[in-house]
Structures are given as C-alpha cells and as structure tokens.
Image (tube, rainbow, N blue to C red; front, side):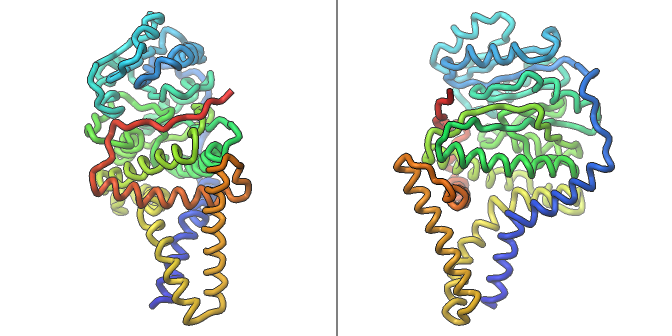
Length: 387
C-alpha cells in the first residue's frame, strides 16, 4: 500500500507540473490547425475601459496618459476610473482630465464591489478592466475587442508581463508568468482560458454578473462563470499589461497566500465546472490546470516526504535516491530564501525556491479560507520601483 500511494502521489505531482503542459501543448498544436485566424482590424465597437484605483494618486497621471495613448478611435473608447474608498488626492488628479468619467464613494468595499458598481454605468457592449499599477501596450484595446467578432467569445484576457528589476522576487514572478502564459495560450487554443488575469481582461457587458461582496479573485470567478455559461474566454498575448514585481519575497508570498485563499473560495463556488457530463473538455482543463494546483497536488507533495522516508528505510534502493533528491530540492529552496533575504540573487536556486513558496502558500491560503479570514478588500502587496 505504501508503494502504491508513493507512486500514485509522484505521478499526480509530475502530471500537474510537467505532464499537463506536455498534453496541452500537443493538443493545442492539433487544435490550431483546425481554426481560422481572427482578422486584426475592421471591428471597432464602442468599449469602456474601467480602472479600479484605491489610493493610487501618485500613479494616476501616468495611468491616464497611458490609457489616452491607446491605438483606438477616441470617440469609441470611454475611460472610467473608480476610486471607492480612496482618501488621497485621486479626485484632484482625475479632475484634470475631462475625458475621464470618475466614480467615487467614500466607502471601501473591495475591488469586486467597485467593479459591480462601475458596470452599472457602462453603456457600451464591451468593457475592459485593467489595474491602475499597470501600463498597457498601445494595441491592447484593439487586440482584445477584435475577438468579439466571434459570437461564441464571451471574454478576452490579455497577458501579464512582469517588468525586470534584477531582484529574486522579480525573477521568480517573471519565470512563473512565462510558464503560466504558455499554459494559458494552450488552454485558449484548445477551447477556453481557465481563468482571466485581472491586470487586463475584457467582457461582453451583458454577460457580466455581479459578484458576491466577499469575492477574492474577481477576475477568475467572473471569467469562469462565463465559461460555465457556454462561452469561450480567449487569451490574447498581443494585448498586455506591464507591472513591476513585488517589492520583496515576503510581499510576493503575501500576494500568493491571498491568491490561494481566493483559489479555495473559487473552487467552492465553481463546482459545476467539474462535472464532465456538462462540458468534458472544460472539466479536464479546469481540474488539471487549477484544482490540482490549488488543492490535491500540494497535499500529495507533503505526503511524499514521509512515504519516501518509510520506503527508504524498508526498501532502500531507488527510494533512498529519491529521498536524497527531495532533501536536496527543499534544501536548495531554503538556501535560496536565505540568499534572497540577504539581498543576494538566488541564481539556480530560483526554481526550487519559487516552487516551494507556491505550495506553502496553498496551505496558508487554505487555512485563511476555512477560517474565513481573508478579506476581499486587502492591503495590496508593495511593488518594486522599476526605472
């Protein structure tokens, strides 16, 4: 029984982080050969760009100028900033831009409630949400909305790009998003993206559903509910949002824990997506890409250590080798953390360090979810200054 549990656990872990990537890579290559390319121009509907901003006065000027510089007909692109709860001088900054619609309420209820309120003022058939601390490439709006020429598309997500600052946190976050972006592209090519990135995401306005007030991952839940309704969510890497990395590994860990708490909340609210009889492809992609990573696989990683130790004692051989490799891997992660905490680059220790951080964050996030201690309105992670 111990042998069976060990190899089953190891197989699931390897599938989650390596096998799934190989499966969807091959599957996506086959799927691409059956699809027609979407035309780059000719479809220019009216669209509203919504920017939720909480106490972001210091960067509002740059964000507004970035939005105004988008390559899209000015008369068709409506800008809306919502600053609910902000108690800085955001209003004074936005007052300099008459072309920007500014919504403000003194009550801070979190990003989900701000988006729920903003959507009531959107009069266009399509809406784009983007974070205030990101900068968009000039073609972002055009590249997103062109996909809505296909009536089966309900949402389109852009790509998140982490700006390099030479830090370990920046290198780790950048590496993770390269891997994640690869999976997102494959999922999208096969059928649909399994969760949009809130840094830059668009929706058909009539498909937007008001979210629960305590929603943590608003972008993920909103986009997956659209998938549940039978629409596709497309990944468009030619529309991207550039964002500085977390200020430090501790700040990055704080962000990861919040995301994992939101992952558990999302899984509880999106149970119908796991029914293979409704949408079998969606069920496979969602379970493999999201559910395994947020729940089962981290638990199996933890189980592998005592199982491996017991088998090394009773059987030796390959089990001893694997136990030593596990020890070296987690030892490298600990050394990477120590190096980074002293301001030194993690170098080749980056992969074990970031991998271990992600899985530790799952347990901390799960604890927050079950204790109901992760607020929807949270103290955002500090971001590193990037020249």
